[in-house]
Amino acid sequence: MSDSPTPMPRRNWLLRLLQGSIAASIAAIFYPVVRFLWPRPATVSGAAEVTAPFTVEELKARYARGEVPPPFNFDNKPCLVVLLPDGEIRAFNAICTHVACTVAFRPDKKDIFCNCHNGVYDLNGQPVSGPPPRPLQAYKVIRRRLPNGQEEIIVSRTA
Amino acid sequence: MSHVPLDTAPPAGLPARPFKAFLEERLGLDALAHLAEKKRVPLHRTTVFYFLGGMALFLFGIQVVTGILLSLYYKPSPDQAFESVRAIMTEVEFGWLIRSIHSWSANLLIGVLYLHLLTTFIMRAYRRPREFTWMTGLVLLALFLAFGFSGYLLPWNQLAFFATKVGTDIAGGVPLVGKYVLLLARSGEEVTGDTLARFYSLHVVILPLVTLAVLGVHLYLVQKHGMSIPHPVIRRYGGEDRVPSIPFVPDFLLRDMVGWYVALGLLAVLAALFPWELGVKADPFGSAPEAIRPEWYFLFMFATLEQTPSYVFGLENKQAVVLFFSLVGLVVLLVPFLDRTADWGGPRRVLSFLATWAVCAFIIQTGVGLGLLHFRLGTSVATSGAAAVVLALVYLAYCRFAGREDRA
Image (cartoon, rainbow over all chains, first blue to last red; front, side, top):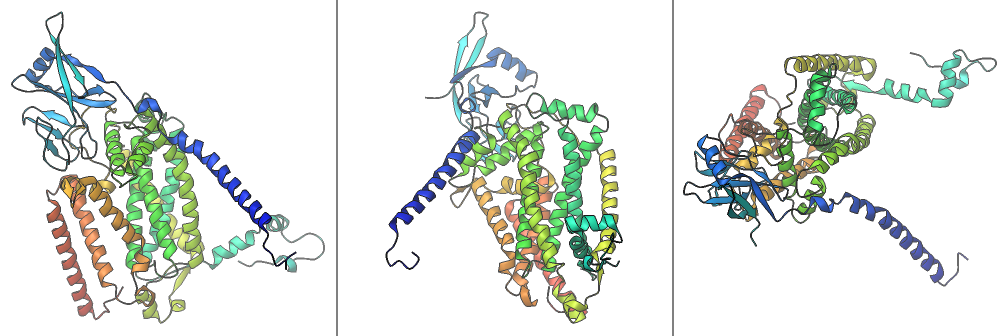
């Protein structure tokens, strides 16, 4: 058999079959593991709009006391609402575009500041100094008058 | 010690030491005893550097023991993690001690590993045939940095939360695969309870297993090749065999143990005087607190991230920083192959200068990260470069003055 002059296609065929089976087995083992490691769907998506946990009047009162309300949850991301001196309200995704720290509004300096690496944004969310490469993601703000006379702040993603 | 080989034992009746013979027949302990007897440690000017590896091993042992103890009370969920660590610190007897020692020992371990790397470089102990010892050592350093990073999140406090956000976001800056790395590391787009579970598993299961395997290879290689002796020492004694040495067991081991005992005392003092802080519980939607910074061993990277402009040659800040440190890591990994004259102990000017520069930059950037220095990136690069030039000139002058060779 060993000195047979002709090749043995059947043996090669069996060998390919074996190799293919081993590869298929490995794929069958690792595919579920990789899918298992992939994030659950619930942790990826989120809400389309949210009502801020404070009204315009409450925000004004807190600024007057020298307080700045911390960002709140919108779409599983921190949302920063800023009341400008002229009464306009802006909302941003508070995740710094540098390395994802959460930014804060500084009323005294009239800017948005990231404590992690000293990134500074203006009140339009545009980077002014420091490492941030891109502007903050801006959200759409709608004000709605409540029965008690106060205005609530509704934040939604821009279309 | 004298060993009686089995075949010369009394042929008839019971062997002289029946229990020992029983074990020897089944376990072959004589081979181990022989190995321990054979291992010797050379004595010379830099013998003290040989203690660092053993010290790292000892501190790793402390981490294993205290880590197992902490795992008995720790609960890896966002609702319970912070509270369980607080309970360890306040309610569990000596919980504060165990946790503080775990944290302090982790920091000392990284420090010892940095020094181990530096002294191995200085001694050129990576030269043929020890290239893989160097490379596995560098992998171990990366693993221990990963230990530090993953363990940092577990108390689920504010600092930990943002350190993890930043660290994983930087990993997301890796070209092409970054986005997937980030999703896999965080188990989602944000740092959540799933991230905490992932980091816990990484910290207590995956990293220990991988570390034990790599450590096994590293120690096997150290055992196989013996202690490396620097070229100048070999030259002074006229041959590797003529360098004086002491047996590892018991002489060097006892000296090792003195060092371990001192380290244990230091850990106890640090834990008692400076118990590790718990901080404030993480608020996933709150702003990052003021003066936030990572552990000291990541400060150089933190400072560099802050100083680097938004864009460098078209690359975003974090991509440029990741790329730069990856290249530095690659160069360090390949040092044994880049040092072409190591084999015969020829001069190593370029690598030595670059290493001096790197060490100066590490120190300066750590100072920047601590807020002690207010340098821009250019200032840091120039200052550390100037410091490296001065140190190189001082060294050359010293060699000339002391009539020593400009080598090793």
